[in-house]
Image (tube, rainbow, N blue to C red; front, top):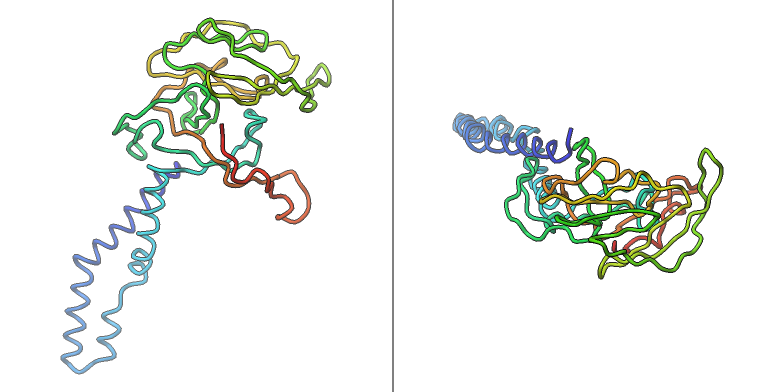
Length: 275
C-alpha cells in the first residue's frame, strides 16, 4: 500500500475516534459519572469518567501523524537511493530529501495539481513515479523539457542541435560485462548553467534516435549513463508523475561495509546538496 494512503487511513481512523468520543462517548461518560457521584459512588464515578485506551492513543497520535502527513505531502519527503544509476552524484544508501512544492502543490494521494508553479528545469534531479509502474519511485536528471529535441550519440548529449559540453575526463573505477572488464570514466557535463558529474564507459550506446519532448512531459537520464534505465528505453515522464526536486543528502549508509553501524555511516556525504 502507498505510504501516503496508509497515513491518510490512520488519520481517518484516529480522527474518527476523536470525533466519536467528542460527540457521543464523552457526554455519555460524563452523564454516567454524574449519576454515580450523586449516588455517593465516587470511586465508580472516577472509573466511569476515564477515556477508553483507544481514544487516549488516538488523541496522542493524531496531531503527530497529521504533522508528518502535511510535511511529507506539501513540503519535503525522504527517499532512499536503491541503485547506482545516478552515480557519481548519488550513491546506493544515500537518504535524500525532496522538495514537494517545487513543481506545483498537489493533492495528497490523488496527486491532483492544486497550484501550478514552475516545472522542472534542465539539470535538476527529480523524483517521479515510474510511468511503466507508478507504484515505484524513480530518480533521474531532467535533460529535456517540453519542445526539446534530444539526441544521445557516442556518449554525447545534444539538445536542440547544441552539444552539451563535457570536460575533465578521469578514471573512476572498473565495471564488468559479459565481454570482460572495462573502465568507468568520470566527466563534468554542462546543461546550460547546471554542471554535474557523469560516468561513461566504452560500451556501445543503444540504437541512436532523436526524441522530441511532448508538451507536459520530460526526458530524463541517469548520470551513470551506460547503467541507467531511463527515457531512452521507456519514454517520457508526464507532469502528473512528478513527485519533487531532490535537494539534500541528509544521511548516507554503506550497506556493504563491515564493522559497527557508526563505521558504516558515510559521514562525508551527510549534508551535501544535490545538484
